[in-house]
Image 1 (cartoon, rainbow, N blue to C red):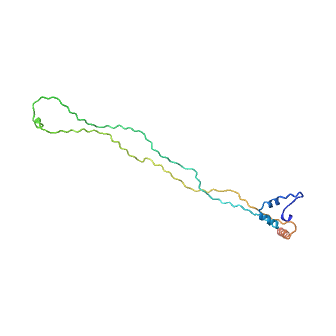
Image 2 (tube, rainbow, N blue to C red):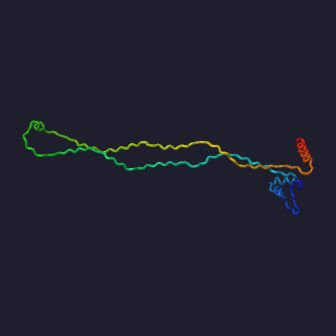
Image 3 (cartoon, helix red, strand yellow):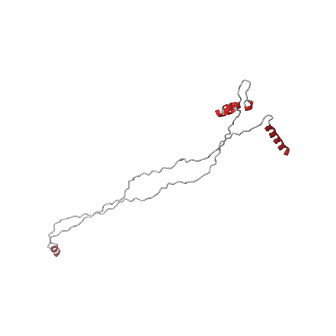
Length: 172
């Protein structure tokens, strides 16, 4: 068990390293039983995208409002009056010329109010959008599994690693 990094105390309790090995998938356990321990190296990436969301807006409603108006206007009107009054005088030349059959017509006129409405545009309401762009700095953290392999004991790899480290110190 020491070969695979598992610690078992005298009570038969497993150490944290072996407990982690038990949480691996069935394939990894089979590999560990065959003498191979697999450690997954996981690295997170961050991908920043964007989406369009509705933030609000404006609603413009129109309605018709009526209000009464009054205006004074002077109107002209005519009336025909017929008056009869008694007269007693001798006949003149003008009376003889008018002494014939005929028709006299006299018309009455009146003015009536004529109401005319005209619709005019007196104001416009413009609705538009201002479009712009901005840059926003996104800050987040990503995680990665960092694996540090250290040789223990007096293996050939450990000796060569110690030798390389001591030669670097001698160069200084």
